[in-house]
Length: 366
Image 1 (cartoon, rainbow, N blue to C red):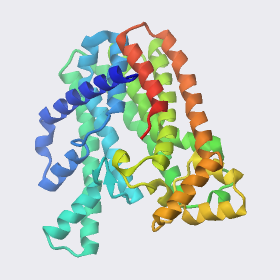
Image 2: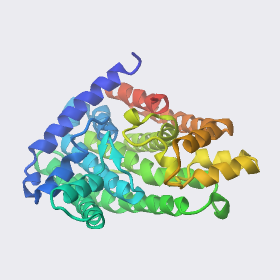
Image 3: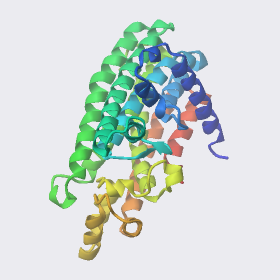
C-alpha cells in the first residue's frame, strides 16, 4: 500500500502522544468531572494526529530520532491547541458530531438533561458553557505541555519561550482572524460580498488551518536543530513546506466535507452546506451557475433544515459546475509549491515521511 509507511508512523505517533497526555500531572487539576471528561473527549477518539505528527517528522528530519523523541511534549501541545479550536469551532457551527461521537456541547447538554433534569433551554446553555470552559482548559494545557519540553528535556528553554510567544500571538491571532472571516462569510450571500474572490477564500482557509500546520513544521524543525533561529535556512524550508501543505489539506477537506460519508467523516453528511460554509467549491459553482442553479444552491446553502435530497442536488451541482474540480486543482498547486522546499533538507526516513504526507493531502478520500 502506497501510504503504509506513513500510516504506521502516524499510528505510532498517536500512541506516543496519547501516552504523554495521559501521564501528565496537569490533568489532575481538571475539575469537576464534566470538565475532565470533556477535556479528554476528542483526545480519546481515534484520529490521524496529523499536526503533532508533522512536528515530530520535522524534528526528526533536522535532528534525528533522538530529537524527534524529545519533541513529544511539544507535539502533545500542538494536539491540545488544535483540540481546543475544534471544541470552540463545533460550538460556533452548532455541530453535533465530531470524530464519530457527540461534540462536547452536545454531550454535556445530554448530561445536564438526563442527570440534572434541566429543561431543554438550560441543558443547552450548560452544554455551551462547559464547551467554552473545556476549550479554555485545553488551551492552557497546551502551553504547559510546551513548557514540559524545556523542563523535561535538553531543548533550549529560550527556543521554547519563543515558540510559545509565536503560538500565542502570531498563530492565535491569524487563526481567530480566519474563524471570524469564516463566520462572516457564512452569514451572507456570496453575491453580496463583492470584495470576496477565490484568493481571499483561500487566504481564509490558510488562516484557519494552514497557520497551525506552518507552526507545527517550524516548531519541529527548530526543536530538531535545537536553535531559536527562526531564520535558519532549513527551518524556513520546512516552515514553507508545511504552510503550503496546510492549505492543500483544507482544500481537500472541503471536498471531503461535500463528498464523504458520515461514518468516515465523523460528522453529518452535508453539514458544511447546511452551515453555509463559503468555500472555493461554492464560489466556483456560483460563478458558472445559471439562474435556476444559483437559486437552488442559495436556497440550500445555510439552510440548517435542508433535506437529504436537497443536499444531494447541491452536491451534484458542485460537481457539474466545476467547484470540486477547481478545488482539487488548487490543492495540487499548493502541494507542488510545497515539495521543492524539501530539496533543502538532508535525505532521511523523516524527509520521506514528510513527502508521503504531502501526497496524502491530495489522496485522502472516503
